[in-house]
Amino acid sequence: MLRSGGGAGWSVPLALLAKGAALGTALAFMMAVIGLSLPEMIILRKVLKVRLVATFAGVVGGGILIVGTLFNRVL
Image (tube, rainbow, N blue to C red; front, side):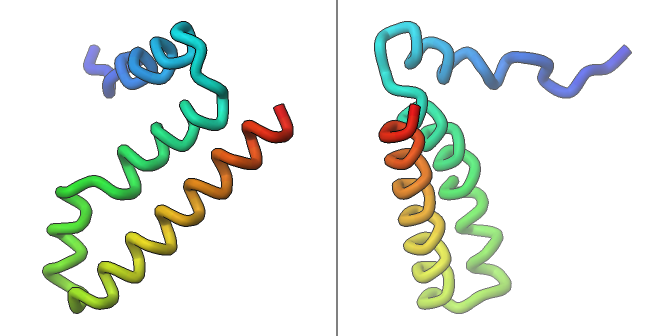
C-alpha cells in the first residue's frame, strides 16, 4: 500500500517545539515552507508577471508573520 508521506513532514516542526520554539513560530515555519518555496515561485513566474509574483510573496509572507505572531500572543 502506498502512503503519501505519512508523518514525515512533522519532524522539523516537532523538533522546533522540542527545542523550545513557540507554537506560532513552528506554525509560521510550516506555512512558509509551502507558501514561499522556490518551486512555487518558479511555477507562478511562468503564468504571472514578476511584479505580481513579488506582491504575492509579500502578501503571503506578511500573512504568515501575522498568523505566527497572533498564535504566539494568544497561546
